[in-house]
Each structure stands twice: as C-alpha cells, then as structure tokens.
Length: 375
Image 1: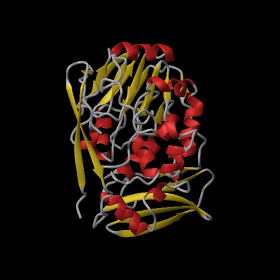
Image 2: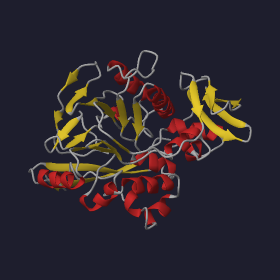
Image 3: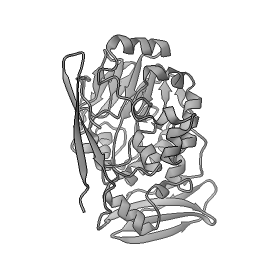
C-alpha cells in the first residue's frame, strides 16, 4: 500500500520581498516493504557477549560474537560490506574542542550511503577501501542519517568505523544528533524507508528497538551531542534561536539532557520541564530554521554570534541545492539535498577559509544562499 499524504501550502512574505511557500506534509507511517535484499548487521549485547543479526534476501542470519577483551569483530554477511570492530559502550562525547586547521562537514545523509561514499572518496576523506585517509583532520556530520533512503544501516556503520580510524590517526569524526534521530528513537516512523519496517518484522523487534539501549549503534547514538563547538565555530543540526542562547552557554548540560532523553516517549520529552524546549518543533536546536525564513536578519544574526563569541554557525536540516553562505558567512547551510540521492557537497573549513567540495572532487567557493525552506 503506498504512503498516503495530505498537503497544505503555507506562504509568508519575507522582508526581502521574496514570497516563501512551504509545503507541510501530514504523513502516515508507510507499510512495510514486501522484500529486503540486504540489511545489517544489527549488533546487540547479550548474556553471552554480543549477537549480530542480518536480513539477507528475507532470511534472518544470527551470529553469536563472544567478546574478546574490549571489542568484537563482525565479519560481513550482507548489508554493510566491511568487517567491523565493535567496541564496548563509551561515555558521552566531549563537545567543545580547540580550533583545528582542517574541518570537513556534511549533513542530512538520510540513508544515501552510496552517494556519501562517492563524495567522501572524491575528496580523499576515505580511500578506495572506505578507510579514513584524512590524517589529523576532522569530519563533522550534522545529523539526520535516519529515514528516507535505503542504506541507513550502512551509513551508521561507516561513521562508527571512521570514528575509530580517525582517532587512531590523530584526527576525529563527530556526529551530532538531528531531528530524525530523535524522531525514530521516540517512535515517530513517518519517514522511515519501508525496507526497515520489513527488517524489523523479520527480526522480531520494533524499528526503534533495533536501536535500543542494548544495541551497539543505539548506545553510540545515546552518547552523541547535539551542540558541538570547534574553535569559534558551532555545529548543530537546526540552529540556535535568540531565546536559546543559554543552551549554548551551558552546552555540556544541554547535551547531557538530550542524551538522557533519547529513546524516551515523544509526549514525555515534549512535556517535561527540562526537555520540552529541546524538542520544540519550531525553536529547538534540532528544528530551528529562523536564519532562512525571515525570522532573523543579518544584524540579528551578527548580534547572536557576538553574544556567543562565535564566528559562524554551521547547520543542516534546511535543504539547499548547494552548501551555502547566509548572512555574510555567519551562517553556513550544509544540507545539500543528499537525501534526494542525486547530488551532494562537503563544506571545507581550512585555516578559516571556506569552500565546498563537489561530487566530482573539485572545490569551489560557497554558494550565495537564497531564502527558502524544505524539510
């Protein structure tokens, strides 16, 4: 049965005299797919150690993995094509770092693993075997691996593996949570690719339970930040509204509250006094779009950055055709519509200089942003 949608059109006149129309979709959860070619692994902690599960051509494959010291090696069956080194749970990631000479950033992968690999290979972030090759540089992923596309599992394992490899090379990979991570984990499945609902059926769990606290990727997600500061640049998925400056000033507390909320019921996190603001669908750090829809002009953005002692804010969430500069390089939008599965771009920050990397491996200046919104 196809996904049913009802649409309404909302328009607003911006100060720039541009008419902004946004399509707001009321969606239902899709029906599970009829077939799963390849998905996995999903790795869970058990009384005996760890267990890996795959769905290969609609057939469930399970393998017990006795823990060896701190890690287990998971060899591929189907789905993610590379061996994995699965580590014991880690503590929450530090979210404030000194400036580093080279940062590469990307956002809103939405299950488009193949396109992500092509883009990272083209710019030598990874090599032909998909191993980290950026040395002591830093890769930041600004949320939204979940939903829409057909290779969410593979994308998560790639980032999980690259984080280990980058650390060993003196570099870093940071993943900050997006709104679709929180949505899936509190059981909002309107955007889930039907393939994964079928996988969940075959594996005997709900889809959120495949990323539960007993799963390796689920545990990893529960230690990711929402706010990440490197030097004078703030990375997050949505944006910081003027009323939420305190969330950045007390970044460690903000991240800890998000992490403690991951996987709790939606109604609970939206109602609880300590987390309601963090999940507000219009103003929270994982949802805010005010830099692009006329809520804030350049003077207001400049004032906000000054109050936070930042040079720029880098965000995903609001889809653009290119990695784009807004408000005089104060806001950099890096959701380059990878979710469509056709194209994508990287942001480079090298000794303070900004550029974007294209799918063919070339580097060009940032695009000049134009007002517009897309979920």
